[in-house]
Length: 85
Image (cartoon, rainbow, N blue to C red; front, side):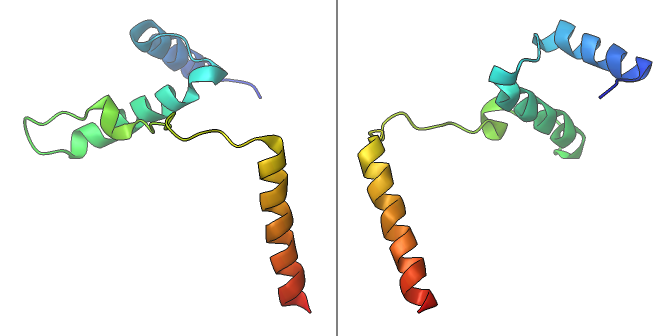
């Protein structure tokens, strides 16, 4: 994919304002873009907040083990097989 000169200038300006765009933080880029899109449509005097556009991933849920995930997938597959018959 090639960028035009105008797109490159926009990307450099964006990075100078908000920091580098990296694959690890594309959620921040998407949230910032959402803020920029929403800003002109908000009531006068209101400003969009980053937290309103950023998806927060919960860390409180215990992560399943590989065996638990495999068991869950086998159960889903068994249900599809049962419905198919």
